[in-house]
Length: 372
Image 1 (cartoon, rainbow, N blue to C red):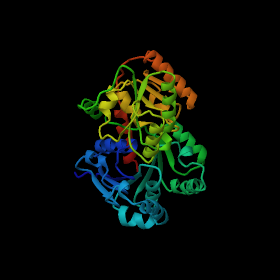
Image 2 (cartoon, one colour):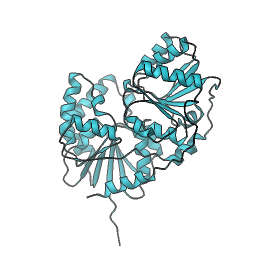
Image 3 (cartoon, rainbow, N blue to C red):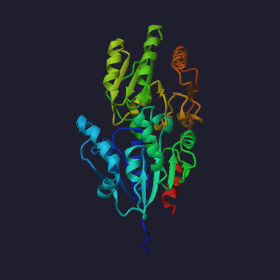
Image 4 (cartoon, helix red, strand yellow):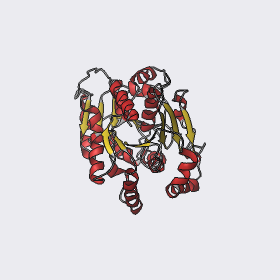
């Protein structure tokens, strides 16, 4: 007897080195034994494309990365996608799929919202929707447009209860059904990759804090530099290491140079394998201004790292994790807690290993995609 395998299309802006991108790759690799999976991206040549199983297909609009575009192209392409969604959908996306999943807020969610009577539509919301837009006129227009866009989906998936609550306040009385599914990550892969040798050593005579994040305003790295400067000025020795890249990099490098912090605050750039750095660091930080569930926190938990985070939606990721500190999302509060951690050299939290198990998430995802 021939059993029909459901065809599922997942859409994301690109498969560059990022949290949602890593989640998607781990997720579809697990699901590809059960479903016929295709990944659609707007931009190509993402570093994580190489991590996809061989049986997963890829479609894209542009072969170039976003970085390779000219300034003019970076302005025009998102506008064209916004104005000509239907044409882009019909030319590059539409196919014989049972389910289409927009896995990230923004252009992908708008593109995948185009009606297709044969296809079930699912949208994934990773962030606090109230913080994503900002307060500009352009942002407010996008917010109004997106209410209509999200209403075109049959199902909305949130990566945290907090994000769902905020979304429901911002967009009450929506038509799609809603559910929360926490981010999936392949724990065996994280542990294996953390054991790879790297040409890098931390100086363990002082505290080594590590953050893995895109260099964007949301992550609050500029705020972190100011706090670090104050700690150093007050003789609380520590070093900060940031793995990641993004549009704020030049600005942050300038601040580090202006404050003469080149020997204590380091931007290490994007790393295809950040896990050996995470394993060796004294403490993992995610001191963002706002967050979704925070996939990097799952990775840090897998490696049993002490964690400190700001009080954002990411707190759900550490609710039952004993080696974690949650600090109020204010500069002086972060300073005081980091000072306390440095003074006590981590004795403030328990060093207790915990078993990590998230296989139930795969079952939830399979049930979601099999629903009629």
